[in-house]
Length: 484
Image 1 (tube, rainbow, N blue to C red):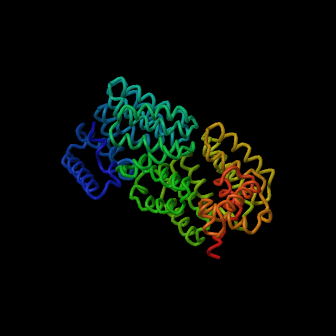
Image 2: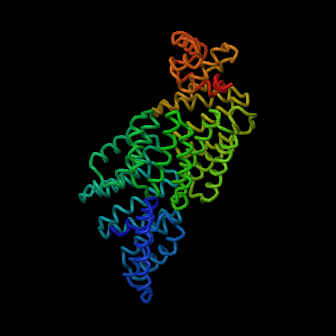
Image 3: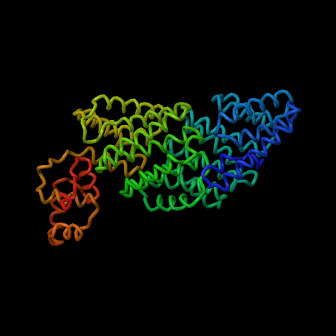
């Protein structure tokens, strides 16, 4: 059954040569189908329909009619393999779990090890779209057990591990996800599976604050070939990592590449929207750090346009869309706030709460708290922050926990800093060392160090990084004193 994994969508973003190869493969399959047109009810045509349709996914519009015909041929001829492929395709496109259950029963009766590892992939995908990550994990792990039983743990097992690990991350079962990813990578899986697993491992490391591991994964992913679906998520890793490394403008350039990737409109919308959400988060940081408003607005408009091109596929996808729209339509951090947006963020949080995704819930509560605090609702903001802090601590989401703690601190009065200290704070926010600050302000390094100590004390910051974050949050990181 290798053929069903080598047609065009797998090659999206691989460059002109491989894209041309993929198109040629598509033409070959379609030509073969034309040759069998005279025998519409033949098992051979039915099997070809199923293989071609599976290869076209996730381009549902192109695959739909092929799956429907394959199912009809399978029913008429009684061929179990054709019927199973039709059931998987039609069931996944109509969110019909009963069809997938029938496909599983037939695969077990047929005792086809290939189909017994294919069915769980469709089951896991459908459960994820429905927002039931625990069942997605259970289905994928069942497939992994089958793969290992047939000696295919390194290949098909690694493919299934990607589904299971993603579900574990979304469900907040991060330790289990890390263990599964490490175990799967140690088995030296094939290049594409290895790349997908490394991207997931890097994303998990980023959420935990392990920037070195995340950067290593990103370095591997940026040189690898991008496929469809799961590998499109590497753009999410690239953008969020650049922000975590303190370079939102580079993150925006990486987002630009993601928006130009042809895979954006060819993959499942639930795979595309998390990348768009990462891009919207990048815009918030850019705006907070003084990027021109018109440029941020233009990028937000691009994100909204990309969102409009996508369908909406189930509760999981709807929650991502709600989060994206809240971020894109969000008021500026330092502008007049629409007091209704705290309620808007509460709707996003409710969606993630219903789906049982703790990290996304904590992130939504954080943004809702910021909206409430900006609108003057300190009790409402504090309540949201308490729940967000608990969730972040339970997950071990150190970067988010730090952001929550910073937002929850008493807001420092700008007048508490002297004019010279405000100058130094701007340069701290620019990432300058004490020696560099001294050279810029024509003071001694020891004097610069004294100013930094006073600033940390007045802001209640433990580190220069925290002081910089407070400066951006409070709008204290203005123009550099040497450029005034």
